[in-house]
Length: 124
Image (cartoon, rainbow, N blue to C red; front, side):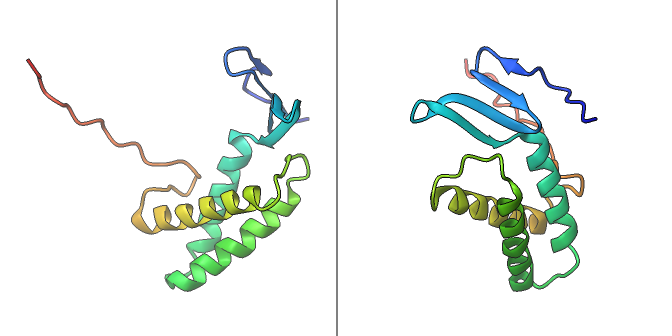
């Protein structure tokens, strides 16, 4: 049995989370819009990190990322997919993740490094 840590419904954002998907009522021409939730996306980034870190060749990393993203995208049956736009978005995220992996910004656990916010000093 899958246990979710988040509350099921957030009244402020008008979103609900069910089985790893975020549900947004009224965002799909008045119907329910569904997209992968944070945990599904974190798991995707973690697996993408593991697959792309097997090589140092940039071209191969992007090819691996595109192939893995295509499989992941097609496996998300609960996602309300907008033709072309959803795939373009998923592929852009994959390419940015590969760039972040190469720069050391994305960790192996699928989370991003946190950087301290620089002090702006006193502006008086």
